[in-house]
Picture 1 (cartoon, rainbow over the protein chains, first blue to last red):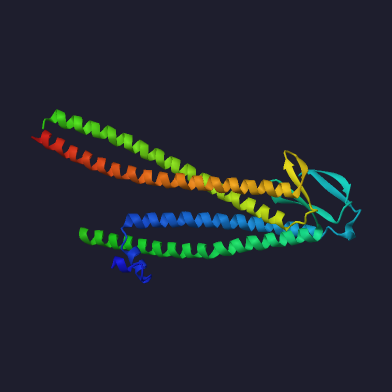
Picture 2 (cartoon, rainbow over the protein chains, first blue to last red):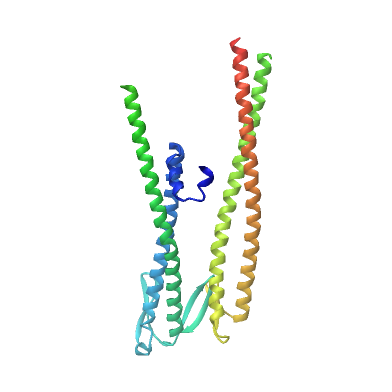
Length: 160
Length: 136
């Protein structure tokens, strides 16, 4: 039987059925940890995506129609100084690890578009894994519960 | 076998067991440490590759700045590329080093597990032997 388990995926679920209670519990816990990990990653990706989208939208405001307009520049999150938008053609983008690049607005938009795409792709990779883990956890929990019930029934009948 | 002898044997076994357990836990700790280090390196590698990718897309005339403390310092594009490439190479080297270390530690862990199981078996045997002597 066990030598065939690798060839027929159906037999794997039978293997879970036959696991002792302790191991089943450990399995559920492990799956829960994995779900948490992937969930956290997904959340961080969503956050990052939001930031990129926000920056991209901000760039829509940087154009010739807003040249020389008055703006308030934040020095801290609660203190602003007045200023004027003098350069509407170029922007400075943080591309990571301490490097900043000056580029025209259009390339900046392109940069953020690419970043959003990249993050979306990563999310698409994680989503199915997370769903699969959820499904596995559900199956494991169901088996665990049915086993517990069985044990309780056995204990009750042996007492009576 | 006298009861004194059995007791002595049990005590030495207990000491060895304790020692082995400590060693095992130490290896586990090291293992975790290098796993964390590896994850960090992985993150750094992907960040640096993304930066390299971005730098590769730029025209040669593009202005590149490097953040040094609170100031942005203008840097040559080629120089920046070289720097990032150097970092990527270094991180790749570190990754290989970590992988080797992790493999070693895994082997060590398995060895410790085996000796622990053996010692435990001996210890139980000694305990049984002592119980037999005592009950007589």
